[in-house]
Length: 164
Image (cartoon, rainbow, N blue to C red; front, side):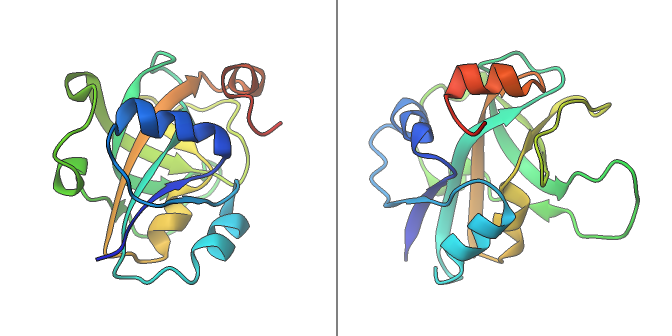
């Protein structure tokens, strides 16, 4: 069985060492956003098991909060249309040891095509990749997000030294 860790940017490798110590799965660095996800993962066999780990924003979770994502949706607050809610595989099913297990929140992730600067959604996280990974239909997908900002691009950049 093929198993991979998927991150958007090189700077997220630190999260692997911090939260998934001893996990030696190959790492795929996709780049940020939908097109980069599709191009980076299009040739990965669909029977693969993936763990996505990375930074995410939240309207109300404290910076530094660790979130296990239970399901993912697209964020489109201005329109409503039918689309599936994509359920994720619990991390415990993927790995027996996760560092900081007791302090992990479980929550929904909303994926976006742009950085979210404001939202009425609470008790969730926002990213720019997870829904697109999930939509590709891998056998198993789990996700762990580290809250890097409270919907502030400046704070995100200062915290992660990532995308501007």
